[in-house]
Amino acid sequence: MSNLRQVAVEWQGGMRFKGGAPGGPSLTLDADGKEGPGPMVALLLAGGGCSGADVVSILEKMHVKLRKFRLEVTGERAEEHPRRYTSIRFVITLAGDGLDETKARRAIDLSLTKYCSVLLSLNPDISIGYDLVLEP
Image (cartoon, rainbow, N blue to C red; front, side, top):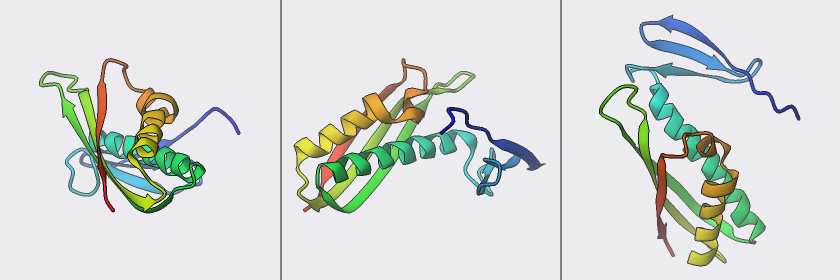
C-alpha cells in the first residue's frame, strides 16, 4: 500500500466544497454548515472516526465483543485567527462482553498516543483527553 493519499476538492458555490479520494465516495464540506459539516467539524469527525476504528480493533484483539460504541468529540478553538483547536476532548461510551475499565482505557490510550494518524498529525501542543463511560 502506498504511503501517499490524495483528494480532490471542487468548489460548489458559496462556501461549499465537494471532494474525496479519486474514484471513491465524496462528501460536501460547507463552511456555513448548511449543506454539510464545516472543515473544522470535519476534522473532529476524522479524529473520532480514526480513533474509533483503532479502539474497536484493539478491543476485538482483546476478545471483547462490543455491544455499544459511541464517541462524542468537543474541540475548543482559539479566539484569534487562525482559530485552530487548542484542545480536543472525547467522551467515549462503551458496553461489551469481556469489557472492563482496564481494557477500555488501554485501547483508548493506545489509539490516542500511538495509532490514530489523524490526531497524531495535529500540532503536539493541542491537549487531547477523554472521559470514559462504561455501560453494563
